[in-house]
Image (cartoon, rainbow, N blue to C red; front, side, top):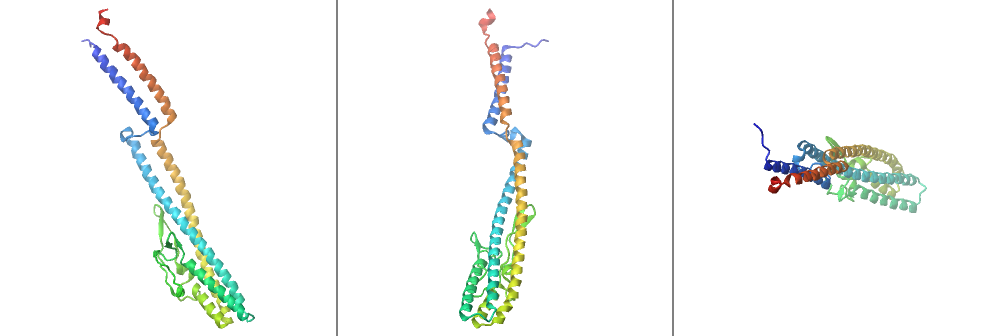
Length: 298
């Protein structure tokens, strides 16, 4: 049994082929316009799954980098405050040495008293320092000043650390307790107690007591240096974490690009090829559709 090819069948097949070629051209044109290989889930169901996963990981990585930035700012501020505190204690030690001799006149002791009093005020300002409106040395009680002016030697600061998550199961504390830096209440080397006793000793002219304060100053300065070293270690760790997060971001963006981004040069070549195929289809189709009843009568 022979199969008869009718004119209608030829026209149907022609239109089907033309629509297929046109659909390919439209898809290529859409990819060129958007710059994306995947414009809807049906374009690549597997690829869209990987693309969404990379987007999620990039979003998480961005949050970690934001925490790194906050941690760096906090630690750098703390580092600066500790440097200032060390400067105050070095100057305090110089003044204490100068005041521990009997050769000082009343005027000289008054001058020492005034400068040490100013150092106390400066130290109190550092102890109550804030960053972005939050007190630095009062643990989680960032809305409350840790030290009072009149009773700083007996103030107890919150020792709770504030850890920020910088990666999966990676947390770094950003703060230090004020008591760890300036001394616990009642301790012989409490910074404010040392200064308060020095001021009293200068007022009363007790030279021996002034000299005895040197060991206490050295003890507190050693503790401040120890805290400063801890901050430095944290800063080094945060720098390494930030470097790793930057590398991870580049890798994720590269993988995402391979899955989602279109290759413009490749699309341009394919678009030209499909355009030629479509034009050829139209040319052939014109010859198939042209015959009429008059052509058959001829």
